[in-house]
Length: 137
Image (cartoon, rainbow, N blue to C red; front, side, top):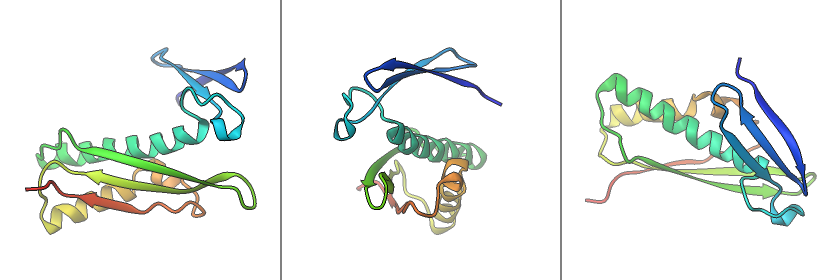
């Protein structure tokens, strides 16, 4: 179990402290929801968690198979919806690879990112299209 302690600071801002490391993270409500938008919003952290989880699991697969994936980048675009309630509607994931992969390796990568724990925890109400981008030669 990992514990995070969050404290409300006022003005729709909170501070979260990661128990094991003591690292602090400021969380702000977004401007379009009445906040200052000066840091990650709660829903930004969901998108960040998804990208970080996928990238971590790509790294784990790379370690198992002896692939060098340093420099691989994931861009997650979060789209909110407001009907019937404000929530995340889509998390568009673009994975920018730093090397070419054959068909078997791409199947491994696809399975890896679609079965990471955060992806598996996201509601079916949230669309999560994933696109892999191979390096330009």
